[in-house]
Image (tube, rainbow over all chains, first blue to last red; front, side):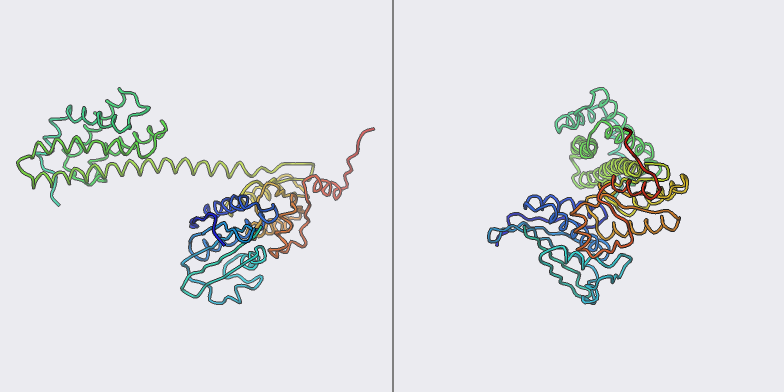
Length: 134
Length: 283
């Protein structure tokens, strides 16, 4: 497995979420993703980037295009130094939200991608890595 | 901190022509004079130097926010505004001021050549002053840029929410681009208002131009649909493309109870149907 290219995009204000979506769209196109996969990935980015901004108080999105055994994937990591998630099981429940949303962002994003990894602890910030293969 | 000495001020005052020539030479060398007429440049440099000297004469020191610097500040604001209109960037506008450092430093060096301690102190003072003035220019430049961006955003807000009448009693709202919360608020208000104004029974929200439908967008749509229903009208969401439909399913969004159609034509057909209107070809 080798990263073909990588980079970082800051997520601090609402505009950054829009830019993160646009970047994800561009990267997914580069990976040769089909329209349906691309739309799913971009939607997942929209959810997670907004979570990073709203609940994590801002952070970064690291991106990586990876080649592995003749398949290409887009891997994105959303990092923040926010309060973290105290109860992961609760957070991964459909319809539960600590804010005012629908409570489907985190679980929905997980269903939209191939690999989903959540690494968080109270007071330690949150890292979410998602991967989608073509 | 030591203040600027009168002797420094006198040196600057008495050597204005020399300072100006060197300043303009410096500006030309670093390319800050591009797009500027020579005559304008001469006038601007002379006026500004005069304002600096008179500002110093009033004994205001380095505090450029003090009232004695009002004239100089206003002049810089006007200047950076006109530079922005000429298409110059903040870098070029700021270097207009920073280029004055060279000639002034040179002048002070020869003026205080027997007294290095005072020279260092006075150089520091002049440097602080010019930096503060330069920073003020950048700040003003930035502000006028931000004002332009803000105005454009507001214009976009207006532009992107046209509610169109498709038929008697049928309104359509073609949404385009990003549905961030502020814009959706405006959209919702104008649609609800138009429903009241026209007494329409059916509103069609078309999301063909919305590239991403995530939970926030869905939440806004659901709220709008609920509000429309509360007003006694019906709502149809059209423009649900296959990839959007699949994404909505994976997200786990519940759009049950909301009438959706793949395109605007189907939505209009349904609306007309509900109103009991039939459209037929004339034979």
